[in-house]
Image (cartoon, rainbow over all chains, first blue to last red; front, top):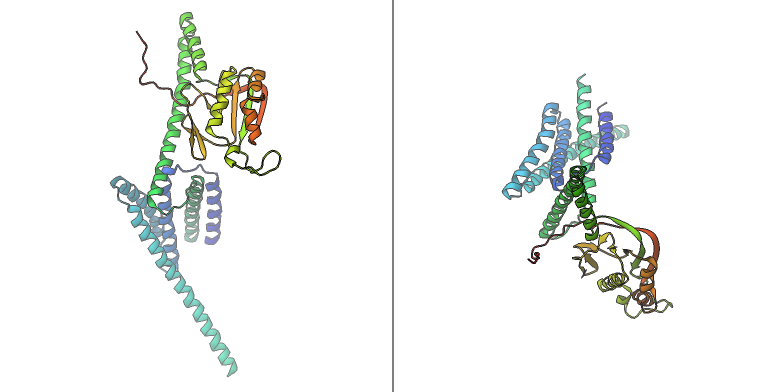
Length: 127
Length: 242
């Protein structure tokens, strides 16, 4: 059910994106930062699901809140002539890697446990 | 129920995310920024793109305003014979200045670089530069056209007016501050036979260009549309003598 919704959402989003008008070049930098923030939220959500402490409210507010906040900070940075967007990228991408590491470790654990079980079973059969 | 809610919110979020990503991809691929080593160059390119955008929007405003002005002028002069005559005068003057699109019989010339590196008879060319269209060539052609009585000339959509300059900027040519490149399509309004004859006759400029191996094509036509000048004519120094 959830998977189907995600797939449908992705396909519809792609179709809308293809037919949507282009963003003026001036604002495409902001959109890029928002996308990075949103992607960070998505990976955070997946990691949280694996840790079994996923909360929809936190996820949704993080998704939109991070995106909007990063846009605002980038705007502020441009006004102050400080490259705040660099900090945003470092933070978000760093967190993305952290979350990816958590996801990788989780599946590595699952795989190792399964293998250990199989080895045990074959050992029992041999005995 | 709870699961359904989660599914819908996740679906909506995925929709927003993919839509944003696709739009961003489209924008980036359209503004053809190549990643460069130096940050300076990147920011300069950014600047250029931003100014271009600004220019485009302002230019659109200008065309809208001109159309509006035309409309207002027409309304104001509807029931007044003297202002009607003035209006006609303005239209005529704009036409002579090159500010309006004009049409009439004339000649279409296409000049294109010859990239084969071969002469007409198939032998290898000694100087490749002689087979490329230069700004001098365009100037000579325009001069010859004017000499033959051309009344309106445009090159690749750029109207040649009294302040037009044609300069060489590396591998492109600049006219009216706009960059153009080969093939060059020159449109001239005038007597088709006269224009064609003066350029194509033995000893005419196009004759020599053809001999050099440049791709030259001419076409006489009974109706040619020559584009309007799309810049602003401004004068700083000239004044009427009292």
